[in-house]
Length: 145
Picture 1: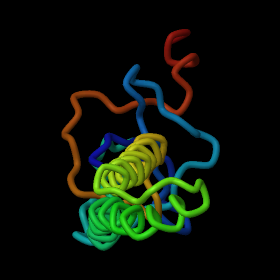
Picture 2: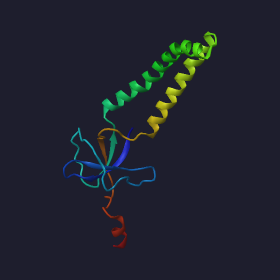
Picture 3: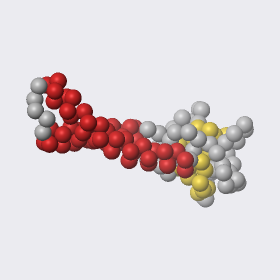
C-alpha cells in the first residue's frame, strides 16, 4: 500500500514517519526504519512516497487468494462429518452451505486483517515529493518567529 511519509532521521538508518489522512505525522518520536533501494537523495524533512516490499505484497496476494479457496474445500470435506455428528442426512445443499460458510468466513477474515494491518516489514522509499517548503522539526517554534 502506497503511503506518504516524512523522513525523520538519517543517522544509523533512514527513519520515516507515516502521514495519516489528516496530514499528521504518526509516531514522530520513533518512526519506521525503511529501505532506500533506489538510492534516492533523501534528507531529513523530505516528503517521500513509501510502499511495501514487493515480496511482502506477493505473499499477501497469494494468501488472500489461497486461504478462502482452501477453506471452501475444507468446508466440502467437513460437511459429511458434521452431518453425522448432528445426525442429519448428507445432501448437496448441506455441502454447498458448508462451502459457502467456510469461504465467506475466511474471505471476511482476510479482508478485516488486511484493512487493519499497517505496513509490515520495512517500507521502501519509492520517490521523493518535491516540496516548496521544508517541514520544521518543531512547528510551534516556527509560528513564534
